[in-house]
Image 1 (cartoon, one colour):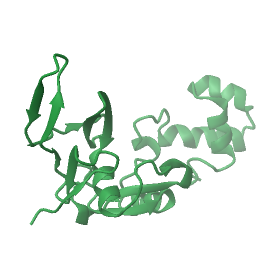
Image 2 (cartoon, helix red, strand yellow):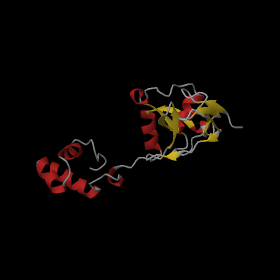
Image 3 (tube, one colour):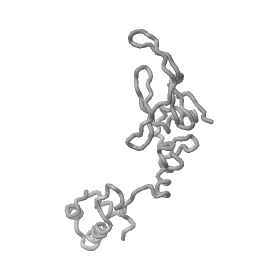
Image 4 (spheres, one colour):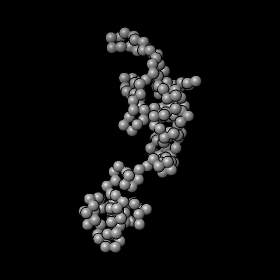
Length: 183
């Protein structure tokens, strides 16, 4: 059975369910011409954001604010203030099945950023090295760069002009901070 709770700071206006549905409650509003209008309860439409999370817009005092649905669900069912400073504490609300479109309460958990990164590596969700969409170098090129640095002693500024990558990238390869699995 679906459980509904009032959304904090939007009590009497909106409710959220543990099945991640958001609804607006019945209410009476006064229009510009001073006539009363009854707005019927209805399930709110959720949009998918650029980052592939469901989001919903809520209106209060004629001001619209957009919320991520998974945060609304978790915060309202676990008594956490939505204005909690997530990024300063490096705390995240994660999806247990790694599906950002599954916002059921039993699929959400709170984790730290460190836990999230360890989970990414464990589940191979993180693109690394030449498979990464922003990678400019291939494995063979990195081998050539290491050979130029270690055997020929070519300066970094000449190497980055050859391969058209930033000098700090060449420095990271040299100090084994990037591409460290290639010898």
